[in-house]
Length: 111
Image 1 (tube, rainbow, N blue to C red):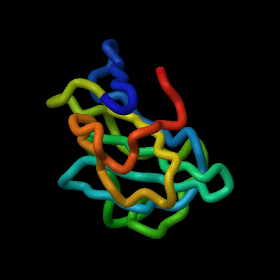
Image 2 (cartoon, rainbow, N blue to C red):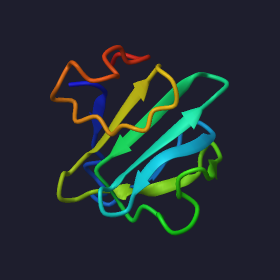
Image 3 (tube, rainbow, N blue to C red):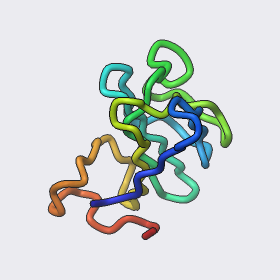
Image 4 (cartoon, one colour):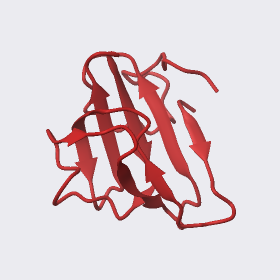
């Protein structure tokens, strides 16, 4: 499993904020995910299992995200938010975490 699953047990619909600034390299309101690419660090942070991703406004592909910007809410169906860091070029993949032959074989951080 690449990345980490985080859960707010107190607030099932807790807000999720970006830990970095950068450009949205991939997003989906129906797929409930967003990738944020930071060129200076050379990483893409992928968030999955979100609700309320603003795919028509601030989180469309190519838009700029500030550190601390609202991304969406924890998805109550999956009951957690998945976060993973990729160190290859601007990542436009949404990794399942089930196939270790994916492009993001070596995450930048291990938890």
